[in-house]
Amino acid sequence: MHILTNLLLWLHFIGVGMGVGGGIALSQVGPRLVAAPADQRGQWWPLETFFSRIGAAGLAILLTTGPLMVWLKFGGPGGFTGWFWVKMALVATAAVAVGLHEWAGARFRRGDVGATPLMFIAGRLAGAAIVLAMLSAVFAFN
Ligand code: HEM
Image (cartoon, rainbow, N blue to C red):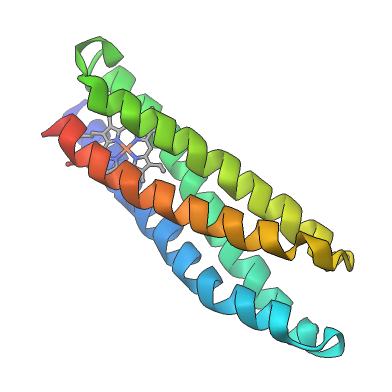
């Protein structure tokens, strides 16, 4: 069991890396995509799609490995302090923000330029929520 929970924590850290790395890359690709003339956006879309998938896959790994560790390593959330629930609220915020970012990105791809502010706001909200979730995780488990 110890090996399994250690592997889950390792995967959890991979998920953090993918989420943060994808977000940082998107913070550079997104503004260039939006600023490009419509006929030159084609060169940015593959990067936007790739880094969006990396970030979303990272979040999916976190949402899978986290509950498994709570169950297998801690026997449920009963013994956790309020920091754990702060972390869960931030995780929920990050998940909603990533979903909104995807939705706004799909609208923008169909030519709806009005979706641009939502793309930027949701992207920044997701980044802030993930960074703060890491902070609350440190207080929750140490
Ligand atoms: C945005 C999503 C998430 C981020 C950024 C994140 C980040 C982190 C970080 C940085 C740690 C290491 C803390 C430390 O060891 O000091 C950690 C540990 C942990 N996380 Fe998450 N996490 C996320 C989602 C979740 C979810 C959804 C759950 C469960 C419902 C969860 C459960 C845990 C548990 C149980 C640990 C402690 C593992 C251990 O110490 O062995 N995490 N998380």
